[in-house]
Amino acid sequence: DTAVSQTPKYLVTQMGNDKSIKCEQNLGHDTMYWYKQDSKKFLKIMFSYNNKELIINETVPNRFSPKSPDKAHLNLHINSLELGDSAVYFCASSPATSGRDEQFFGPGTRLTVL
Amino acid sequence: SQQGEEDPQALSIQEGENATMNCSYKTSINNLQWYRQNSGRGLVHLILIRSNEREKHSGRLRVTLDTSKKSSSLLITASRAADTASYFCALSQYGGSQGNLIFGKGTKLSVKP
Image (tube, rainbow over all chains, first blue to last red; front, side, top):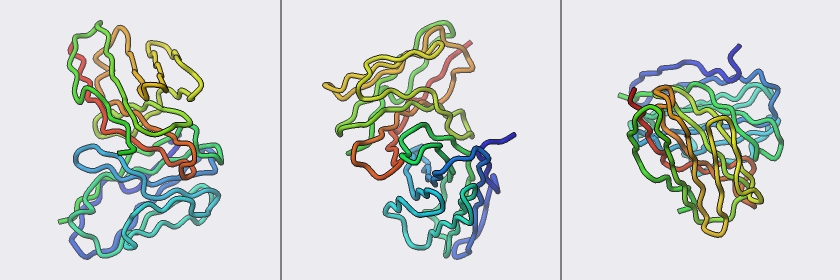
C-alpha cells in the first residue's frame, strides 16, 4: 500500500492553463506539505497544512492554491500556468503536530509547462 | 542563507568503499535530518539527529552533529551500487514555522560496481 500518493505522475500542459495535482496519505498523519523541486534539485517548501488548516505559506504566487478537504488529502491547484512553474512537485506528510519529525514523501509530479 | 550546504556536490566511489557527505548550516536547529532521493523518485527519510545528540547509527549509516561548528556528516559504510542516489540534509529550526524543513541542494553519490 502506498503511504503518500500523488496523481498525476506527469503533467504536460500549455502556458495559461489551470491544473490540479492531488495528494493522499493513508498514514493517519496530521500534517501535510507541498514542496517544489527545481531543475537544480533544490527542494523548497510551498505550503503546510495541519488538520486541514494552513500553517505555512511561503512566498508562493497566489496562482497556487492548496485545498485540504480532509486530513488525508491536500490538493494543489495552479491557475494561469507559467513556464517557470515547470518543476517536480512533492507532497509529504508527518505524524506529529509539531511537524518536526520525519516527513514521508510522495513519488512526485513532474509538471512541464510549454 | 538558511539552508544547509552539502559538500561535496558530487561523489563517485567504488562499491565497498565508504562515502562521507557533509552538511554545514548557519542557524540554530531543533534537529537535522538526512534524506535520500533515487533518480525520478520521492525523498526517503534516513535518519534524524536532535540538537542535543552528537552521533547516531542506523545500519550502515552513521550521522554526526557538531552544533558548535554547525555541521553534520553522513557516513555510509561498505557502499553498494544501490546506494547510488542524491542525499539531502534538512534543517528543522527553533522558532521556525511548524514543519518547515529547509533542504540543502544535495550530494549526488555514484557507487560503481
